[in-house]
Length: 356
Length: 65
Image 1 (cartoon, each protein chain N blue to C red):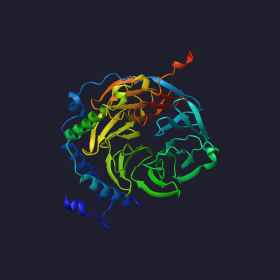
Image 2 (cartoon, chains in turn red, purple):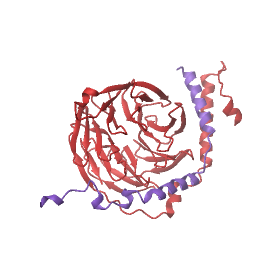
Image 3 (cartoon, chains in turn brown, yellow):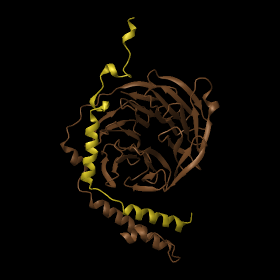
Image 4 (spheres, rainbow over the protein chains, first blue to last red):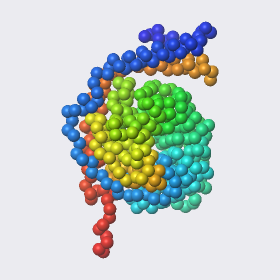
């Protein structure tokens, strides 16, 4: 193995595309073989000994109405009370989820605002979409929010997802241009770009582990890639889905990631086993998954589907526990609140709902 | 980036990934379960929330006043 790991120079002029292709195939086969060797048992088998979960006792508590188009993205403030949402109609709305009041409504210079995120301080939100840009809006009641907006970065295609990693100072974005990018908010400068996807990036998540320098991205190349934010290097890649991945989320321990795809399945990939350890699917589920999230212990996996439902899975036993009905069109976004007490969902039916 | 260059990058990436340390799936699963069990007591969606503490419960108390 030392010869493989060490001699990375491949600048021999006779090195052709053909020989490189062979090398790629060989390495992929070896990777698969190495991963398969350690595949000694299924997660659902290991979890058989666990007591079954009590019935999930949540109800629809609030309906947030105000968007005049499909809701495409939403995010909780760390205050567990405010929600930002963005929509196909070009609007971004800041909601007080307790009262259902709209505190701010901002019209973007674009339709399809596909991504929005609350800054950790709660004083700022970021959003963007078909304008290819990530724009931040400092939130204040003194003046019009739009007057303070600042464009931070621009991709060469639509921006599909964004988040603030750890502080208000940086924004991480994913784009239809197949890259992810880390931006400095203050200077509006690119800090690091992340190349490796072979298709549109659809979703991002930051590792909850203490170092906080790892994130995962997934997209239309059916891959989930784990990145080192400081170096820009891809450190792990996971395949298995048979269609586009629309959503990716870290298991709360940071040791695994869950993905949801147009192939109507969710999957769990363990970082240390370096492979898929569970598939969440049923024959009766034939519609794609747009969004997913874990309860704070990781036991529930909530997933929003194109058939207007939210399926609730037991992450460990890999069985579906219940279905949440309410939305009248595709469920596009879904987030457990920061304290783990409530679930927010957004839909093509123009509404958001709070379940608690 | 030329196609050759892109493929060289891919080869290097795969070599790196092929050489990472892995654990058995059984061990990985045990650790996922352990984390969940340690945190399940504090997971309100699992344990249920008392209605008096639920900020999203419907307010019915004030109508009489």
